[in-house]
Length: 275
Image (cartoon, rainbow, N blue to C red):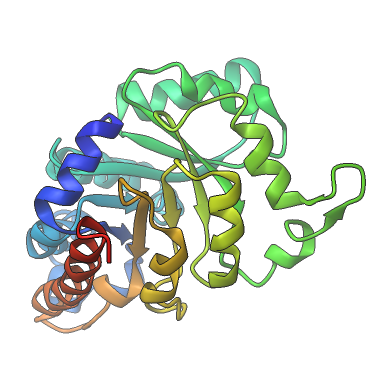
């Protein structure tokens, strides 16, 4: 899915919600455990309940890799079930160089048919560039993440450039890609940073985790993070997919997704009318 298609879907569906499929075996409702593939069955029902309220899904690969070969089968079935109408992000946080990085890109873009992959940029340009050579595909680079440990390195001041490390990532990576194939991860738990993010990267899309269970404020993020194309994919995982642990889990997931979509619809209306 290219940028124009993604933007069109956001305004057509009046939402910029991304549903994180962090499907943990121990949290799958008991009544699904007797099915042939409990992980896929859980995901299938979540997708059916939420697809009208979101434009993207983000399976976190750790939850599938932890299950061994069966987890990869569940992941592949999930991505196929999502289909082509939604933007699919492989939350893999890969970060290697040369042929290894290219193999990761081929795996997620050509074999799994994902639209985007999250990437750790620590090893530099040759760890990111292989992901940027696939038309209609995206590299989503970790810039300022939502976790407490982000202060250990990302906020460190670099005297030679007069930038913090996360700011240097935003500046430097824009030399490698464009707003057509490069996004950034900026956590919702740093709402004050979005002013600076948009000074450095006004046109790029931002993938924003941390709304919901981590306490990120949607309105505060949008106040400073929106651009003319919306420019945000707000991810919510646990607050949606684990809204209930009972037989009504999918119903409750749909209700939470709809609640967020309703907030986003109002925000987009304000953007369109210049309010």
